[in-house]
Every structure is written in C-alpha cells, then in structure tokens.
Image 1 (cartoon, rainbow, N blue to C red):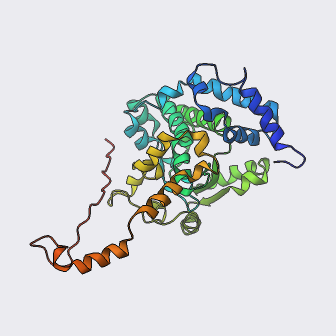
Image 2 (image 1 turned 30 degrees about the vertical axis):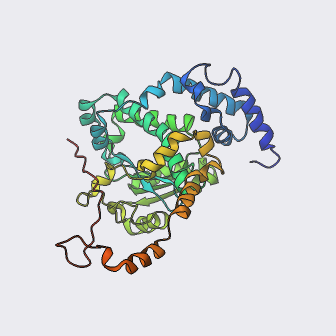
Image 3 (image 1 turned 90 degrees about the vertical axis):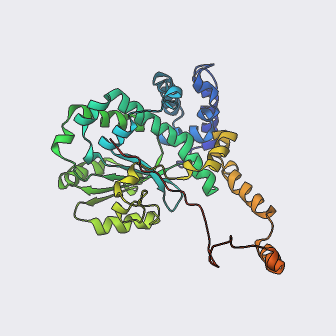
Length: 354
C-alpha cells in the first residue's frame, strides 16, 4: 500500500461499488460466484491500479463484462478435444510447483507452429482454450496450492523458453494476434498473478529489444524478471534449481522430472501438481474460493490432515503388538521369500500427440 493511502478505506469503497450496480449482472453466473467480490480479488485489482478506487472499479467492471462475453462459465466445462493439438503446436503447460508452493507455468513460444495448428482448430478456439486455462489458474490451481501449502498462494513462477524463436514466428499474422490477445487478457483481467518470470534461451535480438523496454518498467516489475541467453544454460539451470526442487523441474531444464520416464517433452503434456490430487479437489468442492484464499481458509486441508494423523493408532505400538503375536501374524504371503514387499505404483499414462 503506498505511503499515506488508507488501504482499508479504499478496499471498502471498492467493495461497496461492486456490490451495487457496478458489480456483475444480477442473476448471472458471475453474480453467483462470491469470489469475484472477495477481498482477495478486489485487492489484486486495487494494486494493479495503484490503489486508485475509480480505476480499480472500472477495471473490475471490464473484467465482469469480459467473463460474461467470453461465456467463461461454459468454457470451463468445455473438454477442448483439440487440446492435444494445441499443446503440440503451441507448447504450454502447468507443471508442478516451486519451492514457495507456486504453480510452475512453462511456455515455449519459439516452438509455435501456427500453420499446422490452424489445420486442427481455429484461432478463436486457441484463445478460448488459453482463456479457460488462465481462469482455472484462479479457480483451481492457486487454491489447490494454497490448501497444500497452508498459506495463501496467489502467484505463479513462469518459465518462458524462447528456444527456436524466429522471424517466421514473430511475423506470422495469426501468431501475432494470438500473442497480442493473450498479453492483453493477462494485463486487463489477471493482474498481480505472476510472482516471477524466468526467460531462457533468449536470442540476441531479444536482448536488444529488452534494453529499450526495461527503462519503461518499474523496479518492482524488473526485479521479477530474469533473462538468460541461449548460451547460458548452466546459469539458467542454477537459477531454476534455486527456485524449484529438481523433482518438480522438467529434465530438459536441468531437473529430474520426466513424467512418463521416457520422453522429456512428456512434462509438457502431463497433469502434475496439487490440482490433480483427489483429496485437494474434494476440499475445493466443499469450500468456496473466497474462504480458501484467506489466511484461515488456507489451513483447512493442513488442519484436517493433522487431525486425521492424530487420530490414527500409533504405528510403533502396532508393530510391537504384531511382533508379540508371533506365529499368529502371517506377514508374508505363502510362496514368497522372506522380506518380500508389495506396493501399488501410480504410472502416469503417456498422452501422445497425434
């Protein structure tokens, strides 16, 4: 909060406005989602507009209209059968979490193949897919990370891999439109959601462009961005491993994760993170987002697990009882050698891109 600004008073002013005629249309899907008027949501937009009440309210009004115009409630239910093609020709993935519990988002714009993508789907559908995935970040991934962490997680770590970026890609009319619309969407509708950006494999021309852009950004934004050239792999691997545990970081970026144990690119297709945990998803269904994204609500799952762990019988005492039972306990099934252990393994199926 800027010095001299009464944050509570300005939050209350915005709250009153969006709970009136400047809020979502009465009876709409947006009106029924309490999170859209929650303090967490309103503060994000206030920060984006330097705590200017009028500008924050105008931004929120625009967001509510955009959610309705894009029919977001239906997009979130859309199975997007063309997803396999989108991921192949416009590579992007939400993969695991960093050391702060934030979702890890990876995008590879240098590998965009728009001509082939447009043979499988349309520009409109690509944008709808990106819109839906970004909204799911707010409604599912960030809350899921919050529940597992036990504290509010409302930002992501983004890796932008520019390997392969060429003049052909940056001058393609449709590719430029998609990128421009996505950037506009992020700026206007999802402020304060990026915690850190690591740009890797940047071509030399990018460095020249950055030297012109950097002076126009505030220090807070610049501090979030790290840039590494295509000849700085060791440096960016060290940076990423400082931010992400090796087990969560894809092997192609210096980590140990290879989701199908065969193909390094399988991490770009896999579903990996707290948002894939059935217990977490059940908790998300049982509690509203505006409750979860509070200091108290963030502890719901952690406290539940602590209670369950405390109510379980002590494993040490059970083991002692088993030992005393002697012959009455058959620890090893007949026909198997002593010390044989069995356990189930969850194998992530490979999702091949046709």
